[in-house]
Amino acid sequence: MKMPYILDVNPDSDALAWERDFLTRIEASVISCCGPDKDGGCPLLRGEKCGNIQAADGVLFQLNLDRPEHRRILAKYVMQLDVPIRVTVTPDQEKRWAHLLELVEVVTPPMGPAKLDAFAAEVESEVD
View 1 (cartoon, rainbow, N blue to C red):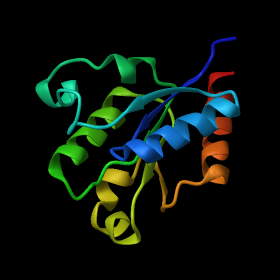
View 2 (cartoon, rainbow, N blue to C red):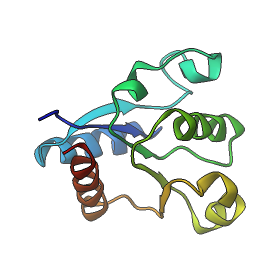
View 3 (cartoon, one colour):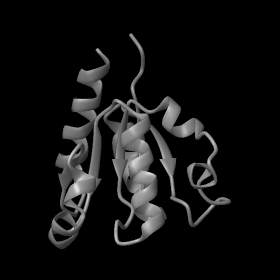
């Protein structure tokens, strides 16, 4: 059986570390990404391939959709992947960007243990 990988995209390094720790404790494999503002930016925004998304069996997307480059990244994920994508947005963002969110699952913050566990279970069931 293939080990499923969750790509966790979150610009908050503390939250990203907590989520990675939690997911690892429940035996989920995690690929962490801080988003385009760190580590030389996002290769997708430069028209390049991203090894992280190529390995992902599920994506937890927590970038700010009010930023155009973050919307472009999400659109690329949706176009390039056929995996569960869970996007964390505020209720206002959910209304404002409804057309972009049609093909993903939307959750509102905070992303606590129950939501993380449910997403990990969903990703695992898709891989089985």
